Image 1 (spheres, rainbow, N blue to C red):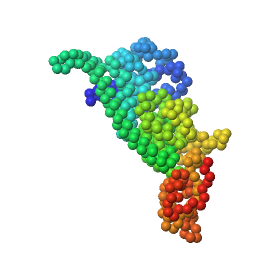
Image 2: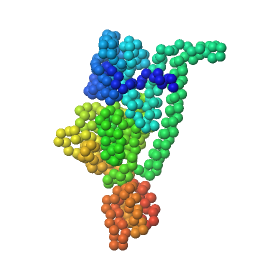
Image 3: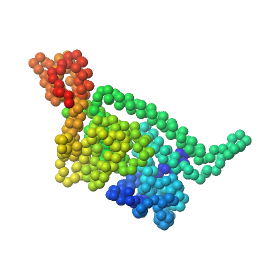
Image 4: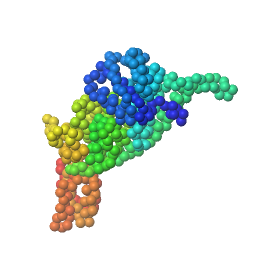
Length: 436
């Protein structure tokens, strides 16, 4: 489609780039903002030639920054033969157009950069649709006099009337594409909802991983599930939500979801586009907030992630802070931290080495205890095959064969599964712990 060949937001790999970090009163207390902005640009594969900082107390209407600084940047673009200039604050469409005209090169802001990174990393069908939807919503705000070919096209039969402008054509094409993507995503979301209903029906505990990008969520997910989700030391290494069933020691069967990483000032178009994926977080029984324990700015990042968790409606989900990457700290041993009521609120682990993962299992078992029950059952000789099913669904603490060849099992399963189990022939309940 012609419109998307002309789309200006896509960034090519290896383009010679100037980063302009604008420090405002609202960002002066965010210590990692500048370094994170540079890391974002590097993770997209751009060739960063220079980074400059501009201090401002407020934004100016024409360029966001002053005209003197714009002239200085224009000279740098010419001298260094730059292809792209990226600004850290969000630019209005008119500011972006004014800058492109004056600098004579492509200009984008941090929001456009994040959208570009998401486009590079999305691999699933749903993920690609979500990213394209966010890109189109972002692009639609930048179409006003955005192209140089907006002269009136000729009208219809006999060329009566002015016809449709190229701008109007672009807007219409974008609106049609957004509508089509939304319909396709609705179908995907219905399939996802069926999976959720099945898990709810079976009372399977749901555990969601959340956290700042590059905190180690995917590595922890792989450790807990033996999956092979792509994990790499870079921002937004994983975008596509992944769900796996897993047998947790002392807890039994559960479902774990790995979700997209968060970042400060995550563009709203992306939050909206990924809301279905983030539903896994909202509907979980336990939220594991994964934190890079070796990051000197992790306190700020915890606060930023908490804000997004509140925004998506998951603020009341029971949460355990998982302080990850303790292998990067000197002489630091895994441990559990409890609040004044004796409840686990923080676990220190290394998902890379596996140290402390047993403590995380313990914390999950305590948190999920309300959904689980401990019972002792008896299986007759003909029903011994049920042992393997229980091994797959729950957790067996003790098992033995009595003098009559019957299996005596002490198990940990969900209340729902125990009810189904007791309806099977040859299964007898000996005792069950009292429900809380």
